[in-house]
Length: 353
Image 1: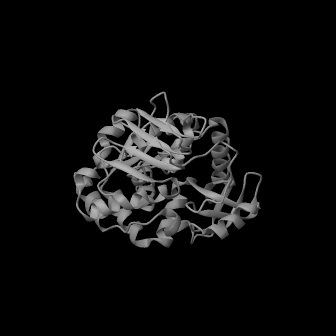
Image 2 (image 1 turned 90 degrees about the horizontal axis):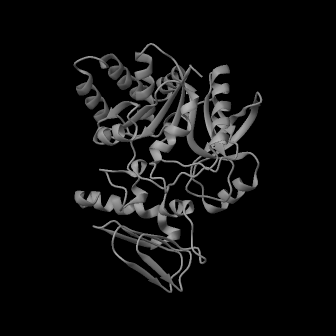
Image 3 (image 1 turned 60 degrees about the horizontal axis):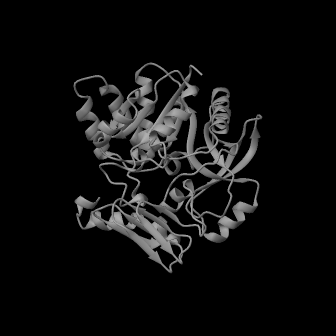
């Protein structure tokens, strides 16, 4: 595993976790466990055996101090602006090439959780095996357990050795009817956002499918380690298009592969609804965190940082108190919490973002 570099993407805001997740301390630096371990700390710890190299963390410059506190052993790449995953991954790849190396990159979001770390490692090792034998871009596919309309889906194609399959097609977030169809088929997987590829392979793909981004990354690469590094990175990121690696590269490329994940209990912790799955609930399936009570209520999620919160005669609602803001919504609408953040940005309510 000396040829492996773990890359952790930690630049997101976690807007669906508002009002607890804020720009000053986004979701990846929060804890969902009784141990107090943050999501990013858990991500780094569970894959530490994959490589003797320190993890490379790509994060926003605003979060440099937090990243160093949570992962003091990591190397950091600091983005002046968030420009989505294509920019983050490309930034990491050219930084590695600048060092004169071409490792297999294991690219992981900082804010996911798993319940079986051994099976996660098996899945990633299968991806590493594929990326070491073939010039492919590997994604870890999760077998759908229900018709989720918030995830992208992958349809597998022909087998690629014993470890995976070529990708036949990527599908964007489907409607309910299509999601039900995908769940019934053995050929479809959730796109987990976990990737494995050699640095040179992803850079070749970015050059082909996102040539403008590639030129901007080249400019950054030339400036790394010089007095112009900071100003060059700032200028390049200001000019970059904000595009995901899935939309900008993977959906267009012909050399994508998928490794069907071993069942490692994956959860993207993408909303308060998903967060609640990590804690013990009462007899009526309420999750009460902090000073709260639920009377004649069921299926609800409460998070209090100080105020006493009482639920009476309600079902399937979310109530989140951060001290300076309160979120109330049905559990069926937790994916839309990010719209509150969009509203606050439009209103320039920076104190609440």
